[in-house]
Length: 234
Image 1: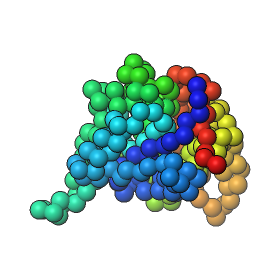
Image 2: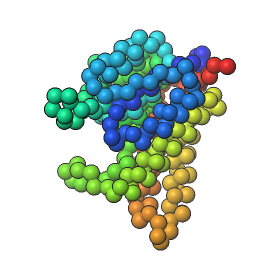
Image 3: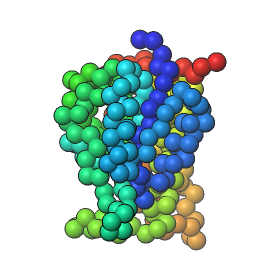
């Protein structure tokens, strides 16, 4: 197939997804006018992003959001009426997957692998999905219990890995499936190096952080047509 030449980045605005700002910004710097960005916050911004996605005939779609195997969540916004923080529970559900027809999708959302087959059936050319994207620890009731240091280091490592893989693809140095393989290698190498640099006065949770990081490696999967490339203008 011909190289992709446009990208659409949909980023859910949530306090615990801000660590991916660096990845979004790097995509913008690399692609310039070839990329369009939509921040998912309130219902209006979600509607704008959905319309842009449906109107795009082809291209590379990058999604940073929360979700599960049945839907992708929108972002957060503060109600003007009550002042409370409100989450948009569902941005894209299974009935909306036709919006991915003719596109190549990199969906960085928990359990997005569960949407892969349905996306392909809806016409997606290729799909990169994840199982878990753990950057915190939780108790039996699902409450976050990770330390600020654990969260910060997990997020930094995840962002660096995804940025390196996407940059490799977007600059034409590798196909998308090769870039996913590169992501797996990056994670494995970084996790080992991170633990080996452990010091008595260093981060106590180093082994746990590396273990969480490696879980991403096991869960990232590629579906569909291979040899997909991206081409930057000029």
